[in-house]
Amino acid sequence: MLSPTTELEALNTMLSTIGESPVNTVEDNGNVDAVIARQILRATSREVQSRGWHFNTEKDYLVTPDSNKNLVLPNTVLRVDTVGSDQDTDVVVRGSRLYDRRKHTYLFDSPVKVDMVILLPFEDLPEVARYYITVRASRIFQQRVVGSDILSSFNSQDEMRAKVALEDYEGDTADHNILSDNYSVARVLDR
Image 1 (cartoon, rainbow, N blue to C red):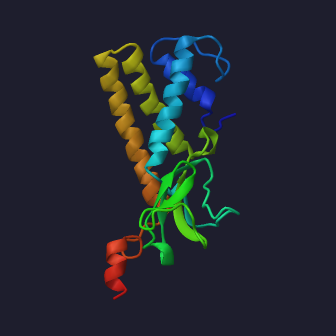
Image 2 (image 1 turned 180 degrees about the vertical axis):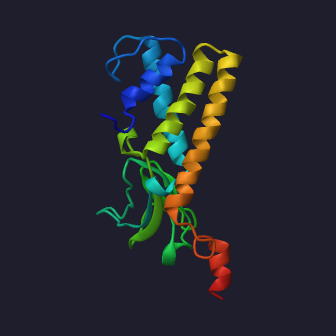
């Protein structure tokens, strides 16, 4: 039965790029190459998702102060930006909390609305993202372990095609609108 790529299948794809035998689990099984491949796969997933895609962005998320007046974020947050009536609040993520750069404080009296980019587990990603991450991680893994320029050029071509497919998917599913999704344009139109 066909199904979306699993983390184990991605790991075995990476191992195949250096001629290594497949493994039966993503957990540490003593195979050094498999451990390195898993680390690279997870790091690549974080890197790719950090960009922020339609599938891993929470729009208009209300972060409410806890009992200590801190705005604590979920531990999967990669990036945050204030939006709506809170867009002029200049916050940054420090640790797991939001920090107000203008007021120089972690304390907030009211909730703040944000757009949040979150890190999803591999199996929660759309297939096109899983494929791009797998191909990119495979190239990085092969370069670090074997370092073959010939294999790298083939892998780079595959990576470029996979990235184009992911960007096409983003364009098809995100419903971007230059008039409403661009802050500068929206400010001009709201005058």
